[in-house]
Picture (cartoon, one colour):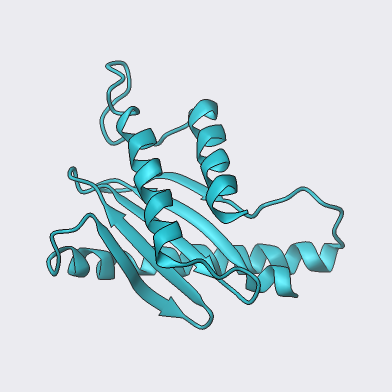
Length: 151
């Protein structure tokens, strides 16, 4: 049950659609069918909470000059932190739960390193602008960043 109450979900949103999504706490362990169904339900709820915070990110963007927007939404034990790039790409991180409490400096550092990694993606001249990121290399690096900051 405590695993279902913990979350670490990253969503990178472009102008019209999500560009990258990752459940950073996902693990391949042996689970029963009931645990898998409960986990799937919680994952859907986590995506809903994260996507519903998009309007709050847009609103918070006008209240500060900083790229790091801090916590923009709180639902139960979970929080959604946001980072807005100069090109208005939104990095959103759903975090929280009973076992996973992260301080603001850790999340800010994660977003800054993620931004450095993300900036290299649009520089590829063969990649269409504002298209989903499907690079295995990018995925591995994002997960390595998450392990470094949140493990």
